[in-house]
Structure formats: C-alpha cells, structure tokens
Image (cartoon, rainbow, N blue to C red; front, side):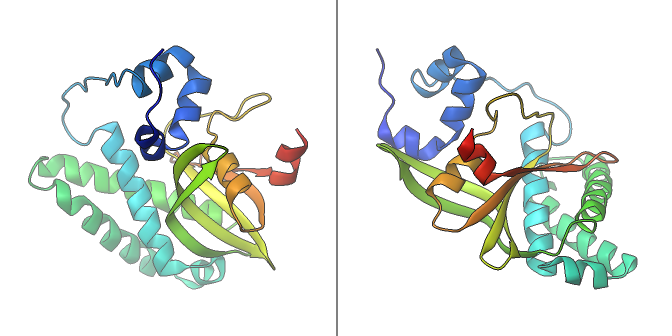
Length: 219
C-alpha cells in the first residue's frame, strides 16, 4: 500500500476527491504513483492553456466591473473595449511561443465566449463580486487542503454564492457532485454560503447551475 503524502494532499486539494469519484484506480496512479499523462503537441493553445486563460480573463473582468449594477450601466462598446484589453493582456505571454494567427483566433473565441457569459450574468438577481481566484488553505478532518475558488458573490445581507467556472463538458449527476471543491469550501468556510454554482461557459449555450447548500446538507 502506497500512502498519500501530506504535501501531495495539500498541493492537489479537492482534486484528489474529484479523481477518486471519477476512477479510484486513476486517482491511485496519479496521486500515489505520480503517473502523469504525456501531452500530445498541437498548434495553438492547448486545452489547459485555454481554460486557464478564460479564468484569468474573467478574474480581471470582474475586478473591473464588480457588480451586476455596474455591468448593466456599461454600453456595449465600452464593454467590448474593456474585454478586449483584458484578453490582449492575458494572451501576451503566448506571443513568443504561438503563431499570431492562433493568438488572433483565440482572442476572437474569448471575446464571444465572455460576452455570451456576461449576457447570462445580466439576467441574474443583483449581486456584487467580493472575491476572485481566492485561495484557502484548510483541513477537512485530518486532510490538509488547498482550495482555489473562482469567484464569491454577495447575493444578499450575509448571503454568499460561490461559483466554479467550467470550460469543458461537465455534468452534475445523481446523488453526488463530480466536482466536489465547492461543497468542500461550503463546509469549511467561515462565510455564510447560501448557494454553490457551476458556470458552464459555452458560446451560445452558457449556463449557471445553482445548488442550495442547505439542500446538499440535507442529502
């Protein structure tokens, strides 16, 4: 039996729970045997780079906009200028390693994706973004964990919603969550977390799926 090292638990956080839910053997191979996947070379940004860039862009978009009220006050042209500036800054780090044609294509994709997501945000009840990409080091039982939360919204007096962005195909199934990070955060957080939510970012089909924390605890 190969034990999980405490520093590995702390580094990977709730990813260990997620991997074990998906496939116990794969979790064993990854976190105990330290097996890694060999990435195939490709042109343009890979899936990980694209996902990380979406997170980075949304982080800076909401640092600038901060609330639904401010979002609604921006005219379309000002919003596009803001988004384009943030996207340009986020893609600069790839300019020396990736051809310009792929950078331009990714900028176009990101602009459409972010605008589509913000159109969805405009339909929500009032909220104020109080934190983005927040890191929390904590313990669950005897397990040391390092959690990174994409976003925390205040949705009422002493009421908070935590959001996890998803840029690829995910689903919430049956009696448990394939993505346990938000549930773990809701359990250990000192904040009064009212809901957790998964933001599915897909151009033309973006969705925000909210789950009551009290409902999860009852289950």
